[in-house]
Structures are given as structure tokens and as C-alpha cells.
Amino acid sequence: MKYYSLKHQSPDVDFREATISGQAPDGGLYFPRSVNSLNTDFIHNLKHTSDEAICYEVIRHYVGTCIPDQVLKDIVAETIDFPIPLTQVNDHIFSLELFHGPTLAFKDVGARFMSRCLGYFARSTNREVTVLVATSGDTGGAVASGFAGVPGVNVVILYPSGKVSKVQEQQLTTFGGNVKALEVKGNFDDCQQMVKKAFLDEALKAKLFLTSANSINVARWLPQQFYYFLALKQWREAAPPVICVPSGNFGNICAGMLAFRSGLPVSHFIAACNANDTVPHFMQTGKYEARKAVATISNAMDVGDPSNFIRILELFHDAKPDLHEILTSVSVTDEKTKEVIRQVYQQYQYLLDPHGAVAYAALDSYHSENPERKGIILETAHPIKFLDVVEPIIGSNIPVPESIRHIMDKPRHSTVISNHYEALQQELLQL
Ligand SMILES: *Cc1c(COP(=O)(O)O)cnc(C)c1O
Image (spheres, rainbow, N blue to C red):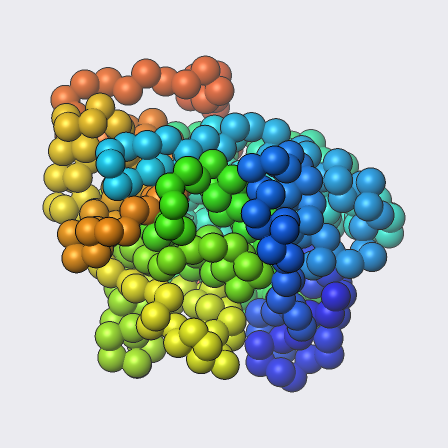
């Protein structure tokens, strides 16, 4: 399998090279030359196929010969070694719970897959790799957890000061060792810009073997297809579901749409955004206008210029089906998000986190216009990660899951830096 740059100024590369370099030399995102085409027997037999076998079948097309079969099978098994249940919330909405992994967020899936692939590639080349990542909250924790203690890999995480939750900050800053946390005096877009610059900095690249772990990396983006298939495996309704994805950088929903292109039955996708409405605005007007990110209570989606949206455009560039037939994108206010958390908790005793609540609001309103269609929201994080938002709304405490209790009191280690590229460059040159 070859990958090309969406800027079309760089040579094609294989999965290994795309994983290691993250971004093409021309600054473009990598995109597979061909989309997997899964046969209908495979799709019809999801219910009778093991999770590992499903995910292996979904990914092997994209990995090609870069990783031996048995190694890839082991990587897949480790990637999904926690439950991903589909829970019914009411008669028309189901929740795909993606928060049962080590950092209680869906990003564990992509981060675990990528860290293991990169570990394999580093071992086979004997070269120390530095993973550089900007996070709006959850990426960093998942990446830190995925890579912590992996020999031959250093991790540098940039996060916007004061814009991540307490649990998220603990998850970013308490590993130490090969994981370095940089607290940037700016917003997520600043962090992302700084990281993008580092990847184009030749002087830096001469010294460090740099790679990204953001959702633009194919090794994080592609395995996110897994749980769309696992959702359909658990789907018992007659018609294919509407799938509603709380979206920020659009990697998650783009993976779902790739799964759809590969044969997964889905009747419609909804990209649910918070006040950062660049894509809803584009879908309405046809104009893509990157904006400055604004802070919301669903902070992992505070992205004004979503990197992965261009991959969705590429997936549907042949206009069959037309993007509008398969994708709706809406913006949900913080006020509505809070109202949904309260209402769903009272009415169905189901506790949503702010990101899942944005998706719920969007799917519920789509359902009132399309009452015959049932759907799935991707519940991308455990509500405990946003207890400062959720607890006052429901008026009670959320029990702390065992898996994070132990990190809450650990001392934090982070370095505060300005939002200028030079500050990052200096930190990296000192590694
Ligand atoms: C990252 C994140 C999102 C947004 O996912 P994208 O792939 O960036 O669209 C949504 N919810 C949570 C909890 C996240 O951490």
C-alpha cells in the first residue's frame, strides 16, 4: 500500500515511512492510494467474527508488508484489549462507549496502535525516535500512556495552559521518564502550529528523528475504523445506523467515513461540533474559513482549523455519493450541551460527558426530523474526565474509576513555555 501527500509535491511512501514521518515533506497529509474494499460476506458475518479478526482484516490492507502478519495481529489484539460496548440509551439512541481504555477516552485506540507500530519500526532500525504531539486534552494522555516506558522513544507533549481539565493534566504530566510535558501559554491552535513548524525545521530534523502522534498520523487515524465495525457487530436494528461523532480535528469521523467507503453499512454521518463551527459553516456555504478556536466545555473539540477535514473531501472527491447526502454537520452551544447532560441523566440515568452530549444533542435533533432513523453516538470520554463541568450539572459526585484514582495525587512535572516556535525549538534542542 502506498500513501500520497494531499499536497501532491512529495513522493509516495509505504505505511512505515508514513508512520515515521507523520506528515509528507511538502506539509501535506498522507492518504492511501486505495481504499480497502471489504467483501459482503465479511460484513454480513461481523456478528460471528472475533473482534481481533475484524480489526485485523480492516487494517492489514493499509499496513501492507511493513509489519509481519503475526506482529500485526498482536498489535491489533493489544490495541483493543478493553471492552467497547454499545449501550442503549433510549428507543432511538445508542452509545458506543469508547472510554474503557487506560486514559478513559477513544484516543487510546489510535495511540495504542501507533505506539506499538512505531516501537516495532524503531526496534528494527535501532534509532531513537522523538514523538512530538500537540494536544487539546485527550491526545496527550493517550499518547503518554501508549508510549510511557517504550525503549528508544521520547515523547514531547504540548498542551494549552489552563485549557485542559484536571484529570487530563494529571494524565499528561505525571509519567515523567521518557515523557516530557510542555505547558504552552496559548491555545490548541498555537500548539498545533508550533508542532507543524518543528516538522519543517531542517536544523532540528538533522539532530532529532522527529515524528508526530497527532490524528494526522496514518497509524493513529486508520485504526479508529476498528470501533465502527465493532459497533455494527453489536447493532441489532434492521436498518443501518446514523452515526454521530463529536468532532474537533475530524480524525475520528474521517475514519468512520473511510470504514463506510470500505463497505460498512451506515445510513448517515453527523459531525457534531461545539461553537467551533468551521465545518458546519463550510457544509452550509461551501466556503472553508479557518477560524480562531474558542473555548468551550467540550474542550477536546476546540479546534478552529480541523486538520483531517481535507481527508474527508478527498474520500468524496468523486461526488458519489455527494458529501451532503452522507454527512450533516451541526454546531451545538454549551448551554444546550449542559441541558442535554442534565436531561439524559434525569430521564434515562445515563451520564454523558460534554463531548458525548454534543453528539447526543445533534443526533436527537436529527431524529426529530428523521423519526424512522435510529442512531449511535460515539461517547468519546468518561464523564469523570470533565467532573468540573458535569458534577455541578447533575448535583452529585461521579465515582472515580479505579484506573485513574492512583494518578490524581501524583506530582506533576511540566515546563511552561511561550507560544512562539523558538521556545519549542529550544526545548527540543536540549533533549
Ligand atoms: C479528541 C476528542 C474529540 C475529537 O476528535 P477528533 O478526531 O479530533 O474530531 C472528541 N471527544 C473527545 C473526548 C476527544 O478527546
